[in-house]
Length: 144
Figure 1 (cartoon, rainbow, N blue to C red):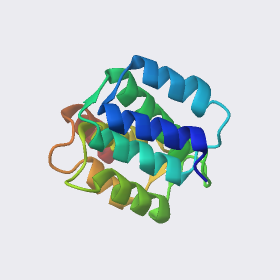
Figure 2 (cartoon, rainbow, N blue to C red):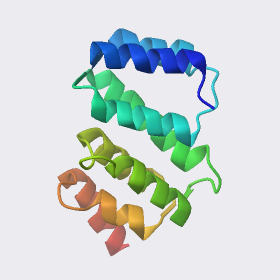
Figure 3 (spheres, rainbow, N blue to C red):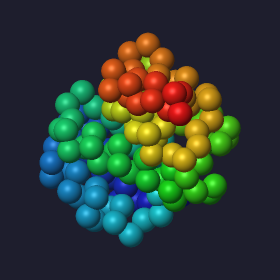
């Protein structure tokens, strides 16, 4: 369930069409500090990343860390991106007109962090446009 403060935050950011460092601080320290992150919250934040034309680097960094922690460590099975999680992540990260740079970073970081990752997310993370750094890590994984 998405709380009232979170909804107001999203509405305000959408009205201003920007996310600045102060917004990130409020989100991190006040709105989501004591909140159990859910798929719904992740879905909204990823959509916000795509919808807001101006966002600071801190928002991207926070979103990447939040989604990686949620998908890899806070969600059972721990450390594993199974078929269900991979399907949800690919759907969320690629919605609309395709993944944003932050969404691609999220996918790459999840693949890097997880102990096991379903091939659906692997294929998405290393598809055309994926970072060269992530691709280098993938080649190392394949060589192992």
